[in-house]
Image 1 (tube, one colour):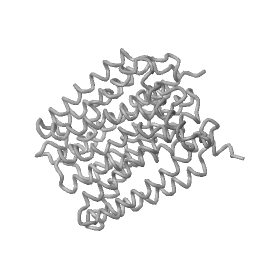
Image 2 (cartoon, one colour):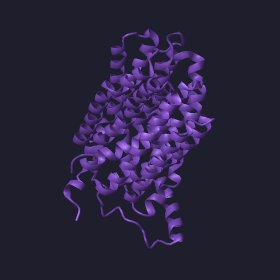
Image 3 (tube, helix red, strand yellow):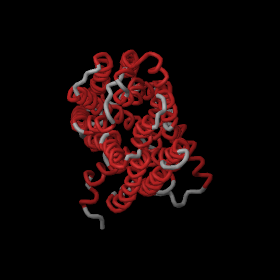
Image 4 (tube, one colour):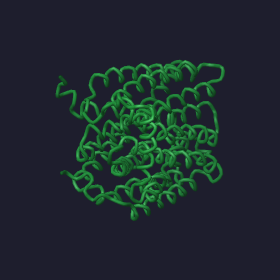
Length: 424
């Protein structure tokens, strides 16, 4: 018999989405800081780390496997064990003779394991909750996912920075950090093996033959591309974060770069603290507020305003690149404003993809949506470094603001379910 406390959403949604966000943070954000400390150029950092988006881009190719074989609950636990092993691999190879080569190999392993974990976790979320509960908890889910991101680019980087000072070695400091993270994921696997509910709709097809599996695999992909106005939907998913995809790669490099190079000259610890304190609080408020409004009035009413709230705060980077403020409090406040808008606006993006995925194969269809989302982050991120180095930080952030406009325009043409997210 499963205890009620084990099945309450608050007992597993925060930990599950914190665990979902962490490996993404390690692969896409922490690696950026680590390679910056190793002396790579902005062009190389943006190019190499953007390639790591690829598993998230192509994960729809194996999402039907997660949907068809075994339960999403099973896949969640197994992937958390593999992520823990991958983190241990990074920790082991950082002090090697060629840390870039070997750590990138384990980052690739982490990326594939994390992408598979995303498929299972997002599918489990939709199986375990009604559409109204999905809307109500989306702010909590998004907030803890972003907590993980901010933990990675905040407290984790601060910890690594302090270890650098204490040990006097960059490689030793980061190796210790990743050993601890590997152990953390083993704990996650044990906890979720015990705490996750077992919804009746999340079942394995034990009697499925190979020919039936192949047929289902093809059918799932075809059925996605038969959805109403799917071309417009895909373009929207690709363009919604066109500006933010470039901003997320360059903003930490901008804050770490010297003032002579056009940056803000923050230390590793200062960068971690500014993104992990006030920014975290404002992100939480933004994510919960977005989920509340979407659940109360429905996504259709709020999607444009939520998108606008996500994109306008990017202006703070234009100002900071122009003025190069010296006040650390002011810089942290600007980051907090941007994080609130991101939390509020990203909620609408996730909810819209859930709406598109609704149906018999919601797990695989949502994975396809997030695959397009990752592609929309990968390609702009790849050229962001060379563009920034060519035009400078100030003009780059102006370009980012221009790049946010297409996603706003596409909202007018989207097919929308006016009842999605409302209380039934």
